[in-house]
Length: 333
Image (cartoon, rainbow, N blue to C red; front, side, top):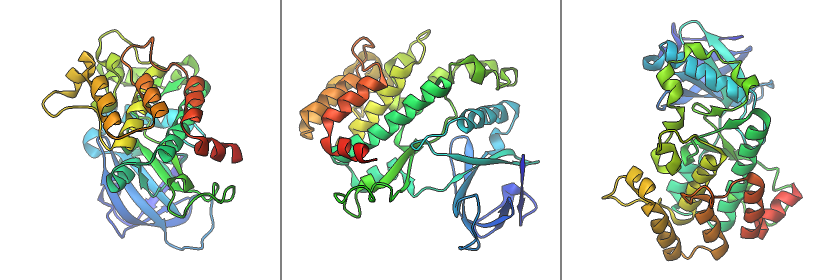
């Protein structure tokens, strides 16, 4: 395990401007943020031209002090164990894991420009071609994770989709503007409540250290607004179609700038009663979404599993029909 050194007496005391050393490379804390379970420190290399195996800009993720009991630490180790095995262009890479005696494991990852939530907030809506491009990236990542490790994500939402500038595409086409969304690489992050289906990977995790109640409720964690209806039904397991549902909700939000929920009705009630589906059709009609995309999104978020899109191969096939521009981009890659 790689050790970490810092200018304060405690990792928990680090603030903007403090220094951190990892693998002999010196970084300065540029910013920080907190999530539901973790703390993120955004770092920049102190010497700009210092070459190394770690990126110039990194982010450190550690578990919050208030969550650092035995069960919380075990859940974080579980996330890192899953994450470490996933190496794909559209999955945020785990660069390395460092260890601190006080906080335990710390994830080191590349620092990205922002999240899809940032893009939605700034642009309000995203055009059909760009939205389709992003969904294709994420679908490829999810298909890879399931095929390689039997992993479902189960917490797909704009906050967990990060992006960074990637000149890779610009070298292959002259059709992109300088501010085109397609010049960015969108990647899935945060595998904290992922569902592990294969025994080989599950065996790497000491389930005895995870509170049994927490283990049994993995299916019911996540963000309600993007969760498939079946995840609220006792005894109904999550599946690939649960992640496809969440992708469909993200797709819808990018196109119309909102989700299909009413202010006076709780989202769970809307999901269980299927009211959300009617509202989704209505807001897409009002936004003049392309017919092929409307049809696909309804298939992706349909409450009936027999109707909902069931495979990533099928999903990719339909996405090709939704955007020839996006298809051309992936062919050039």
